[in-house]
Length: 246
Image (tube, rainbow, N blue to C red; front, side, top):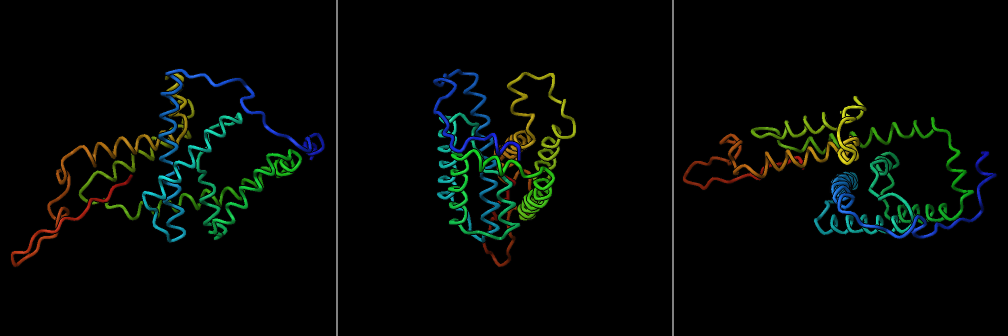
């Protein structure tokens, strides 16, 4: 608790503390890639929460959530912080605590704003021992992984390349964890994106999904019996939609 005594009672972040923003083409291109990965991760979090709460995520709800995510990122930049994203830890909290009320989430957001204005309270939270946070993290991240497995269980892996999409995406996502120096010889902008397992896995899944499930002609990679339900008596063939990973 040494940090509590030295912390101020009241603190307000100064907008643009490090100066006015500047715009460079290389930085914009890199941030666009990061924004795409962030939106992909956020979409996955929304779908996971929707499954936990038995609420189907409609396109409008997803678009509103992504807009809110983008707006918070803009406000975060004004107040000198990193871009925001929907944390998978929060998805784990929903499954672990079974508290699914949006009012609880809004109240927690208000508490976080209060903590940001009162450095002493923030220092108290920061004094929580790392092993305690680690123990809670085991449950939360395990819940996130289980939710992802439940989502993948709904995917059709027969007569298509979805198994390859999942396998390669998971392998590429684990590379920075298993071999931290795997991208050491690559340019800095490439390392910024690929050194994150989430970024690498998301980009791989997007590219492979486009390659295998969207670019080829429909039904070219699927078995005939997977494309439709053959019916006797002169009835028309009924086509089934192809299940995709992304």
